[in-house]
Each structure stands twice: as structure tokens, then as C-alpha cells.
Length: 346
Image (cartoon, rainbow, N blue to C red):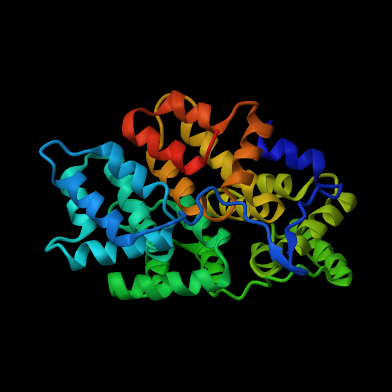
């Protein structure tokens, strides 16, 4: 079932919400929905030595490289890099560039970056050269926390010597630029509180904005969709659907065109169900002829320590097949092994 069909079917009802916490010694602790965890009995020096040997052997041992990198958390990989580079004249990422090729090289280099560096890199790739990948810009800025966005901006300036906001202004235009810059402010409400009075007010504002005689008032949509927390928006979507002949995504689809339509619909999808949003991304990356390796790498690497377990479940619920099986059918070799490793045990 497609994302929007599920949205149309469920938006007027309270969607199921997982119990996000478990109690540890009487204190609530967030459940962990990542697929990659801290490796037990971890030794950065041992792993660095193993990688050095695997890279420098006459025949590069991809099996060893994959088994080490995919079974370590990002924090552990950063420690391996430090030890490796302290005992070797070459940076670990440069050594892997020389040793590996194609998609396997790309995914291992992604694994070696910190989350902020990887996001900054992806944003750079999406905006440099001819054309701009608008979907990537929206995906990253709509799904990262305020703190993560602030760190991405800091890293982007440090690495690429430009303010990210300036790049977005140069590479995008119109209402789409306004929406991205609003997300880039990193001022979104991140609480779990729902204000019923605000729900009613926002639903009315959105309805009036959609029915404006001079055309849809896009700024009203941008202001609300980029500032409210996910639970607040979900209640607003439900309220909107009860007072309108159509759901909010349908209204946006009918009234808008181009990048701003895609951007706002993606924000709605993320607010309603972020794992389902990413499941749809992965499905589109593998459906039909050809595979979008960049999307597979970006989503699986960036969500492996956040909510990939939820994404895998949503993928099966939406498409009736396991994500791992789709990966097996669309990829091969050691590259496939890394992606499957990121998905965790079958």
C-alpha cells in the first residue's frame, strides 16, 4: 500500500503510537530502534590493526573490512579512525578509497563519517554542479532534530567554507527556498505536547489558506508545517480532514506544483510517520529498472542508529516484502553484504 493511500485511510483516526520508553531501575529510558549498537569488547587498536592488514594485503580482504565497519557503532568507527591514523601515514578514508571501488567504496566512506559530516556531504552533493537534488534537501532538513541541524550547519561551514543558508538561497528559489530556510532555522517544537486550541486554530488557518480566493496561501502552510511538533501536526491533520472534503496531502497535491508541493507533502509525511516516509524512499530507490544506490546508502547509514528497525517493519507492512529481500534482489557482492549488515539480523 502506498504511503498516501495509508495516510488517506488512517489520518482521521489516531494512529498507533509505540510505547517509546522502557523503565530501567525505575527511570524511563527511550527504546532503541536502531539496528547497529555498540560492539561488545570493543578495541579500537585491534580493529585498526585488522583493517590495516586487510587493506594492505596483496589482495584486499573486503570480507574483513565489511565485517569490522558494519558491526561497529559510528562512535566506535571514529575511534578506529583516530587509532588507525595515529599509527599510519595515511588517513583511513583515503586508504579505503585506494582499496575499494564503486558502491562498496561509497558506503564504507559514508560509514566513516560522523552523522553531521555525512549529512553535510549529502547536502553538498545535492547542490553542487548542474542541477539540484531537491528531494535530498527536504529529506535531510525535515527529518533531523534542531540540534542535528545546528551541527550540520557548523560542519558545513567548517568543511566547505560557506554558510549552508547561502547555498540554499543560491541553488533554490521561491517558496521552496522559504520552506528550506524555515527548516534550517532549527526552531521546531520538539516536545510531545498537544495544544488542542492550537490544533483547532491551525486547522482553520490551513483550510482558509487552501481555499484562499487568490490561490493557496503557501506561507501559512510553511509557517505551521515547519514549526509544530509531530504529534501536534498529526492532530491538526485529523482535524483538517474532518472539516474538509479532502486530506491535507490531497489539497496540497491539487493546489501546488513543483518543488514546494513535494517539499510540503514530504513534511506532512514525516510528521505523520517518519519511518514510513523512509520506507517509501527505499522502495522507490529499488522499484522498476535500475537502483538509486545513493538513496539506499544515505537512508540505511543515516537511520541505522535511529529508527531503522521501524523502517524495516513499515516497509514490510506497506509493500508485503522484507526490505532485506528487496536489497538481495537489487544489489550484489560485498556492497549487498554491507547493506544487509546495516539492516541487522534477518
